[in-house]
Length: 116
Image 1 (spheres, rainbow, N blue to C red):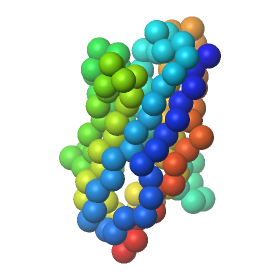
Image 2 (cartoon, rainbow, N blue to C red):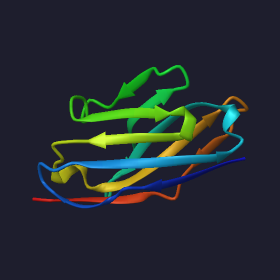
Image 3 (cartoon, one colour):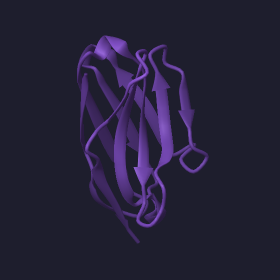
Image 4 (spheres, rainbow, N blue to C red):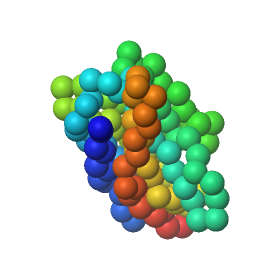
């Protein structure tokens, strides 16, 4: 089992920045990829960014150039730095951990609200 705890969400003005943090615990040795997803009101959950255990990253087109995902292995933490935030970035952001066992783990989500 893997537990994920997100933090760092909040209210920010358009053009501002936020850093989201996801701390993993439990069977972290089994995780091969972690990432951030988001669900905006009335929309389906979508990919924001992922990072593999080897450091390979992937970003949604909507955040390329504005978002940076990093992994602090020593702290078992994944960070998402989001800059130049837009109102359309408003969503609940979820951390995900993918395990080599095939299991999928999700955090409880953290709200990000960008005011115009």
